[in-house]
Length: 131
Picture (tube, helix red, strand yellow):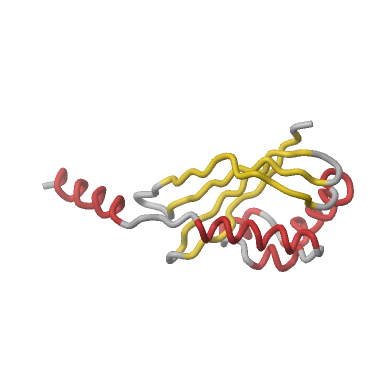
């Protein structure tokens, strides 16, 4: 009986498709807010996991430092990888990896989104210098 319950749960988890397009749109929103320095607005659209891990003040400080010292202004990017991680007992995740050019350097950006109630919420963001 336990095998059948697990099988049903497993099949239900795999039945609903995950649309990546909303995550791509959230990246565009993130970048627009980054360009205009509206880091508080970025923080407001992050997941509860993100907000638990990082205070708004700390996030704003990190983003200010990133723009002033590391990155500069955004120029362009290319999506290199998109990945969906299905969660049986947790939210599904979408990971988007971009190679992005900023005025001060070229970086690999990793955006991780939670799918919460069919909406994507930024769960994690990081960048690593390529040059």
